[in-house]
Length: 495
Image 1 (tube, rainbow, N blue to C red):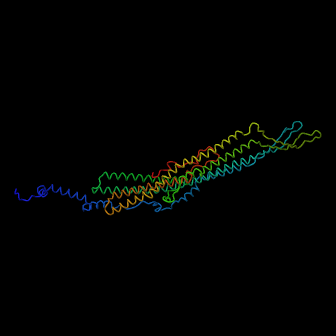
Image 2 (cartoon, helix red, strand yellow; image 1 turned 60 degrees about the horizontal axis):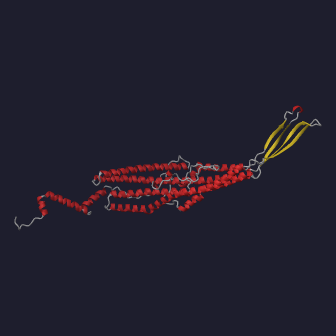
Image 3 (cartoon, rainbow, N blue to C red; image 1 turned 90 degrees about the vertical axis):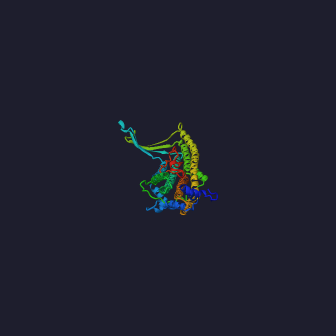
């Protein structure tokens, strides 16, 4: 080779000697350059294709009250539900009947015993001398030592108990109706939210299918999206069942189980019960009707002791009558005629001085005093548990409302803007949208917890609107005045 001949560059030599290798090197270099520069025409075209795969994405935000806005029939308000319960709940009529019965027993207890009128006869046939006596008598028991007033006072205590029971039952029914109403409202909103999530899941499936058609997603991603979509459909169906269940509970507690399913009118986000935790526990432990009932039971026991102490004083029995004596007088052949008689008797309290009943009444007073303390402690213990649930639910609701949901909405808005500018793919936008609606569902669950636990505390934990009022005379009844919501009816926020 001539030493003065210029040297050919290596890449030119490769181009002429091995053209296939040169072509591969060129394509590889172009691919690397495109991957590193998003402004290259190739990447724009690919993004435009991905963007076009989900053109049906709709920018929307979750909101409450859609069922109420779109309802075709009339809405059921809380006041309407309460009025229906006042007219149809059978326990209210039971409580009213209990008051009337106690008042009637008090009137009966104050009545004086009736006199006894009878016939008396002696040697009615008269024998050979045609004698014998026949006549009538009147007998009356005279109640001494004011025992009637003591009995009347005792029965008035029963009347007071019945009246407190009636007030308690009214509060119980109203609290139960309010809680059932807001459960229906929350179930109504939750059903809408889960329906939204199911629809978003279907959008994700469709997006993944379009990406698969363009080679930007594989079959596993499509299958995962389909699994999530099916799961969301099941969840939506379950929330529809929950809505029907909560409606049946509301219809039962208002006393009209045949009521057709209606859309209820209400606002979960505003006006929820605002309670101070310490004050709420103190209010339940000191102001509950259960405490008043326990105090009235103590007064009843004291009245019973006063009555028992008077019972040892005997009553007086007076008897008077007239008899016609047919025996002939000794001086003249005439009948003796009418004769009057009188009796006065009193029981001597030698052996029975009612000492057993007096001792029992004193023991009942001790028991009643201890019962007042037990009721207060029991209420405080159970209120503490519900207050804890209320505090957690309120914390969740406030955090979701003030921090979590605003951040999620901002994230979704920015992602939607980037998608509009062709800087984000449709799966990322839909994922951001799905996350926002999931947080909305959790927010609804927290709101339900705030309402149900807050209403339970305001109602002094009296939540069973179909439990029958207790008869005032049932001193050994199980405590129903301190019942709390059943565990399955007080779901944790977000469940």
